Amino acid sequence: MKVYWPSNLSSEIERYINSLNTDNDGFKYSPSRNNLTEYGELLELGFSCYALKINYIISSNKLSDSSYIDKWSYYLNSFQSEKNIFGANSYVDRYLVEYHNLFKFSTLFKDTLKNTANIFSNQKYETSSSKLKSYIFAETKQAISTLFQVSKISKNVFLSFPKSEKDIFDKLDYFNWSKPWNAGAQFANICMLTNTQLSFEDSSKNSKYLQSYIKTKFNSKDGFYYSGKTSDKRELVNGAMKVITGLDWINYEIHSPEKLINFCLNYKVDHEGCDIVDVVYVLYKCSKQTEYKKKEIIQYFESLEPIIFKHYFEDEGGFSYFVNKSQTHYYGVEVTKGKNFPDIHGTLLLVWAISMMEEIRELDRFNLKVIKP
Image 1 (spheres, rainbow, N blue to C red):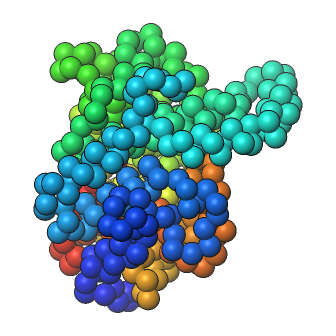
Image 2 (image 1 turned 90 degrees about the horizontal axis):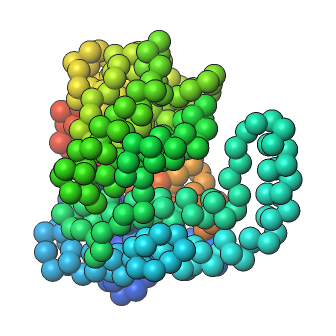
């Protein structure tokens, strides 16, 4: 199937992103133009990060103005809270906290039942409180990495993460590595913070501990990162994507890129934004490390274009996270009703996927840049 992208795709995406701006050219953005929930209209931090990343990918002229970037950075840093229950200098969107606190008591009974069941099954289960803490940690990581992308830093250094070999191993071993998508994300978060928040000497030490840890999760037979048994191909690919983003932050090579390439070239992509971008990212990073099966990777990327195009709304200029359905949730918060409209999350993921595919295919149709997640 031949895909006919608009020649001015970047401009069309910028038109869509501008339509999501809700405060007169300020820095607050909606997750979608339509079918929003109450908290979809209220949340601020995450969608502003998404919008800034999209503007970076499409090489928006706005970002050529240093004062404009300063103002946007100031806005993001306004969410950094020096004293809070989530860790000093975390980035906290009060509406994310408010939403989860509203539903805390309704989920308490479920948490109790699941924790009781897991005592006997020897499985770990996150309570609503621990989930909220992990959401704030992820948003903090996202804010810091977004600022880094435009060469800005946090107002205050964030140090509420493991900074010794024991703490790193204990923290990461808490997570279920037979489900490497979530566990790998935790590894990546610590890697990013190690790179951006510590002195050179301390960062070097922490990086070595992280390298040692991930070796314990590397499976030499298939090249993926997990423990125990997992037959879920989606978990493997998405988990590898998270781990590889972490390896990139600590400047450490992928352990077996050829095996990952072999697997991914035979991987049937689901039609969700995360699944598409994750397999693209794994192949992109592997192909930056080795020339192995470069032609096959290019052909695979060509085969993904029609799939990505199904998410594109030519009239609005944006992408939907699902085919014919907007992204419904953001860190546990329902933000849209999931109707047939584009959304900011899908637009970020899929234009990022296109940017990586363009680079490997040595194309420059849309003047896109690749972000560092």
